[in-house]
Amino acid sequence: MNVYLDYAATTPLRQSVLDEMLPYLTGKFGNPDSLHSLGREAAYAVTSARDKIASLLGVKPGEVYFTSGGTEADNWAVRRMGTGRALLSPIEHAAALSALPLRGNRRGTLSTVSADGTVTPEDLSAAFREDTGLVCVMAVNNETGCVQPTEELAAFAHARGALFFADCVQAACSRDLKEILSHADGISLSAHKIGGPKGVGALVVKNGVKLKPLIVGGEQERSLRGGTLNVAGVVGFAKALELAQDEREKFCAHTGRLRDLFEEKIFSSLGENVKRDGKNRAPNLSHLTFAGGGESFLNLLDLHGVAASGGAACSAHASLPSHVMLAMGRCAAEAKRGVRFSFGRETTEEEVLYAADTVCSLLRA
Image 1 (cartoon, one colour):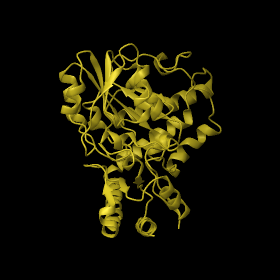
Image 2 (cartoon, rainbow, N blue to C red):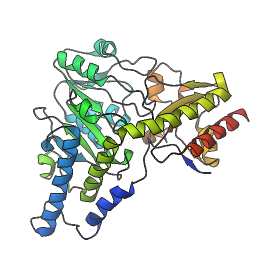
Image 3 (cartoon, helix red, strand yellow):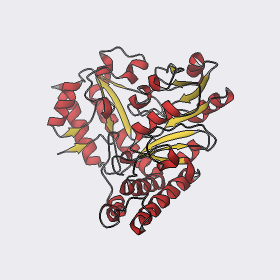
Image 4 (cartoon, rainbow, N blue to C red):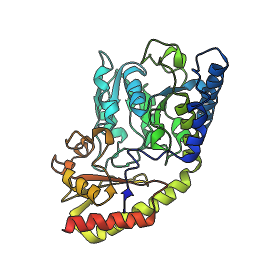
C-alpha cells in the first residue's frame, strides 16, 4: 500500500479547482494587461478571483496582492512591510527568517519560544526594541502544527506601535482566516497547501500599512509586484481557498480523528521511545521524535510505501537539525530525529492504520 502523509508539503490539485482553471490554460489565454478582448477576459477573471478572496478574508480587494506562493509573500512582508526593525519568532518558515538580513539597515531580531512550541507575549517582550516596527509570528507552525495565539500577540504588537504579520500558509485549511485578519495587519497564503495549484499565493496587507515594491519593472499589483499574473493559477487559488474555508470544520474533524488514531497506535506500541512535539496543535499535523528516527528512517518509510517528512519540504535537502526543534530546546541530535506526518481530506483510516503499523514494525526491528 502507498500512503501519502505529507499534506503539509503539498496537496493534490482538486478536480473542481482544475475545472475552474482549464479555460484559462487553453482558449482564454490572454494577458490580463492587454487591451484587446482576450486580455479583458483574463483581466476580468483576475478581478473576480481577487474579489472572491477578499470576501472570504473580510478585506478589500485592493488589499490582496498575488504572488508566486508563500515564500515570496513571506519575503515581501519581512523585507518591505512597515518601517523599523522586524521581530520574528525563531520558529518561522525559512522564507521569513532568511529574508530578515535583507530588510535594510535596521534589520531585526528573534524572540524566544517556549519548550512546547508556543510563542507568548513574554517571549516577544524580551526581544522587543524601541524601534521595532513589525512583529511576525506564523499562525500555525509548519513543522509541529502548533497554533499560535495570534490575537494576543497582535494586541502586544499594536500596544507598542508595531504592525503584526502572520504567515498563514499552514493555517488556511484549519483556522478562520477572516478572524485572524480581524487583528493582523497582514498574512501570507499559498494555493498548493489547500488543494490549489503550485506557483501562486498571496500577500494580504491592510490599507494604510506601508508596503514597498518587491519586484519592479511592471505596473501589476498596484506597481508593487511587476510581472504578468498567472491567470489560471489565480483563478484556481480563489476556488481552492473558497473550498478550504467552507469545509474547515469538516476538515478539522476528519483529520483530527485520524491523527489521534495514528498517534494512539504509535504510543501504545512504542511508549517512551517516541515523543510528541508541540502543544495546542492543528488537527492535521503530527510531529513525533523517535529514538530511531532520522533521514534513514524516512527512507525506510518511503521504501515501505509511507510518504512523510523530517520537517519543512523547503529544507528537506539540508540534513541539518530542525531550527524549530532547536528553538524549542532540543539538542542537535534529537532535532534530527523528528518526523512530520500530515493528513488531508483524502486520507483514509485504512491508510493511517497501515502507516502506524509500518512505523512501529520498522522501529521495533
